[in-house]
Image (cartoon, rainbow, N blue to C red; front, side):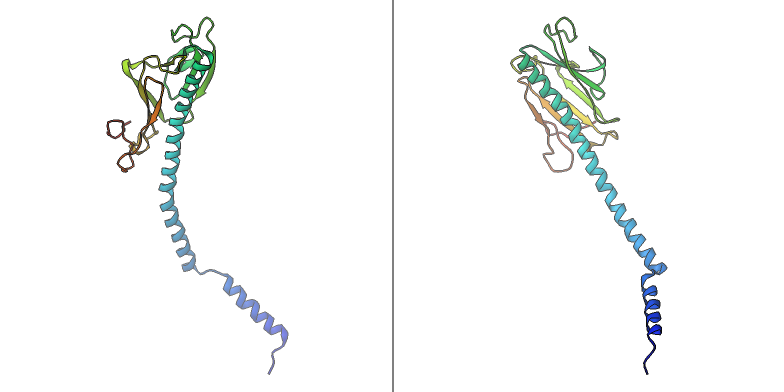
Length: 200
């Protein structure tokens, strides 16, 4: 016996409605899997973000060094790179703001015919950048030949939480050449030129 067309359509609609619904157990299992995947992904994302910040932070000062060196050669005079908190005066912290200026008499002050070439603001709040040099001079001068003014040293970047795996370093020699420190032993922590882990 054949069923009327209307009953078959009604039966199909009821089956379709039941198949579109989730049971409570299915919903709990899916939510548990999503929570587990999110928990696994968050630390990886954090490491990626902090590694990128470290690379950008150390590249920021590297760009400033190259700008000071290139400007010294182009202008044919001494240039100074230093931290600044007041316009035209050296002093402060490297991880706040720096300036590059021509320094004709090499006195680390903007005066006479000296010209401020640029100010650069550090991109990351909370992270630190420090300059360690012979004589602990908190400035860097470049000569018209592209050399430092008898200075060598290193810049160290540290993350806000001071985690050693995100510490970065660049080394600067008297010839004005820069070299980045590397993770030489593959343990996730970069080493200095003596092979010792970087510390913040």
